[in-house]
Length: 137
Image (tube, rainbow, N blue to C red; front, top):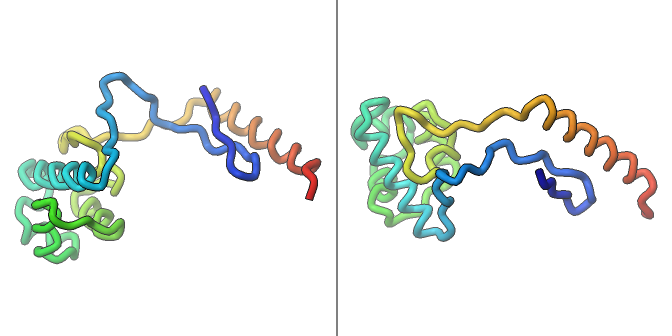
């Protein structure tokens, strides 16, 4: 498993989601992201697992109905706060709304690090801290 280092040479936390060939690729452009968000919001509205209309989503999320409509039409980019509010209305995290082909009955989850991964991360972090003591200032 490859680990990345920060600009100061400290290890970043290893990614906790394993790449599986069946995972859809993440959106690469703003327009693709808008489409993914619109499609996923439409799926949530149709799923019956939360607010089933724009008005109900407005009431539960606090996001203006016009904003929800613009997101659904793909005409407007949503702010992080807006995505968080909408996700919360459906019992989700904001990042889950940005995963292509969201299945409302089986939303994506992050896998926790295994004991071995956590031990490796702790050892790398300690080694980086030890090395930082010797770095020229």
